[in-house]
Amino acid sequence: MAFALTKMRVESNAFADQGVIPVRYTGDGEDLSPALSWQDAPEGTKGFAVICHDPDAPLVEHGGYGFVHWVLYNLPGSVTSLDEATPVGTRGVNHFGGNGYGGPMPPEGHGVHQYYFWVLALDKPTDLPEGISMAELLKQVEPHLLGMNRLVGTYRRD
Image 1 (cartoon, rainbow, N blue to C red):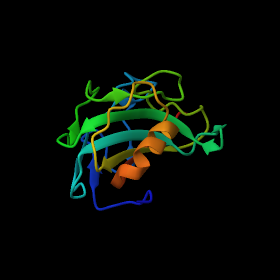
Image 2 (image 1 turned 120 degrees about the vertical axis):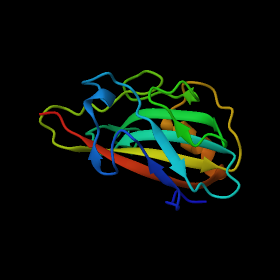
Image 3 (image 1 turned 90 degrees about the horizontal axis):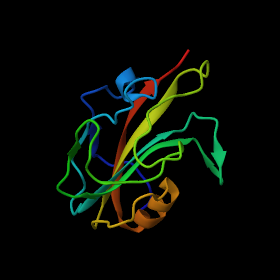
Image 4 (image 1 turned 180 degrees about the vertical axis):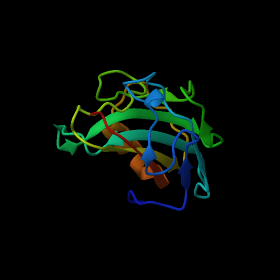
C-alpha cells in the first residue's frame, strides 16, 4: 500500500488538530511527548508506529526535507493511545541526535511551524531495534502499512 491517509482518527487531549502545541510539550518547556489516541484503525491492524515530523524546518539531509522530532515503534495492535511522556514502545533517533521525543523548537523568528504526529497502522507486529531513523523505519514498515493518519499541531518562537 502507498503512504495514503485513511479514515483512522488521531487526537490529543493536549491540543486540537491545527491548534497550538502547549509549551509543556516543546523544547522551551518540559519537552514531554503529548498524549495521543487513535480510533478506526484499518481491519487487520496488528501493530503501530508513531512519527512526529516538522516539514517547515529548513533542514535538508540525504534527500529528505524537514526535521524529525519523534520515532516510536514496536507498538502492539492493542495499543490505541499513548500517555503523556509515554514509556511504551521502542524509540528511534530524532534529528536532535537522541532517541525518543524531542519537542518543537523552531528557530526564533522563523514563524509558525507545523508538527505532524503520524500514526501508522501495520498488518504485523514489529520487533525493530532501538535507535533506527525515520527513513529506516519507513523502509521496514512500508510493505506492512495498512493505513495512516495524522494530527497537526503548530508552534512558533518569536
